[in-house]
Length: 146
Image (cartoon, rainbow, N blue to C red; front, side):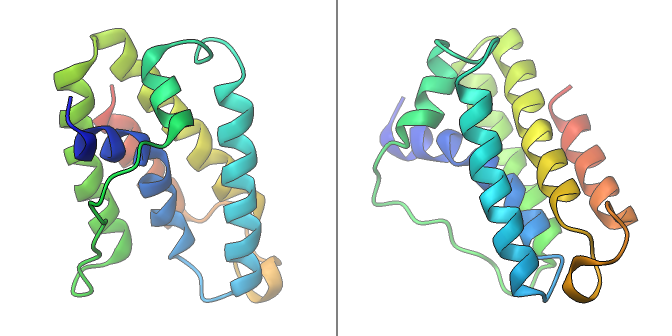
């Protein structure tokens, strides 16, 4: 597997979470969501069934590559991240087995769920816990990794 592919797979959970970071104009909410993502990712990587599996070691290592993730400013951010996740899914499917693909999807959905629940919408995060848009996005990602 080449370095750009390793980096793409390793950054898949972050790419997925970026689809939720972009749903608010509240910088406090972004901060809460980003911290929650990092904490959730770390906790999952240190627990079963992810700990010790080569795919998740790759996520933990964050391989270096000169490849950059470029955002297409003409697309809705969740649409963009969902399309990027299709590329990530193809890479994981090509290089890992069916069980790993399923676990990778569960890992990402766990991160997304924690991020979505971490900060309510609205002014200063006082709105609903998980918006319909967030729920749709999580379900779209979940269906990709079935």
